[in-house]
Image: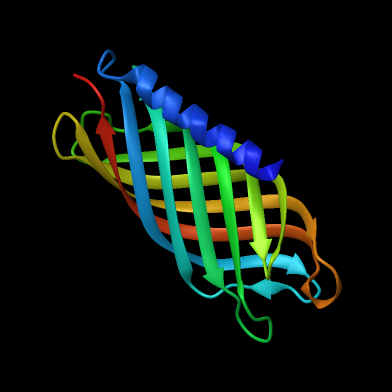
Length: 188
């Protein structure tokens, strides 16, 4: 069921990209990559993550009033610190909303938030829960189609439970990430 849900989000994102095609200059695709840090999975004991990595892809639409909306698929992973071996990762699908400041300027700060579902996996066990995220960053348009951005993301997944014995986890997952990305308009 969990994999089916994530596959449905990926399919919807692909469909949205195809439907947007070159007919509306406000549609875009975006890719991001960067580092995750200070990840934590509440368990007994807590699992704290080392510095890891983060990647995401999105399909979205800009509106004339400085707002944007998008669907996003994100993956974050980090090795566990200390006595807990292995790694902890999250794979999530989100619907995000953004507000862009200084549209038309050389540097365009933005803020955003999103909600969705994410699967948290640690030491072979996994569970899916409600996920939310907050983002802030600055974008720089290189031309009419291509925009680069640097962004900070806080991501949380609530009430995830799985496993038994020493690998059991029951609680919330939290992580931070800093990413660099490119946004490309599909039509002009």
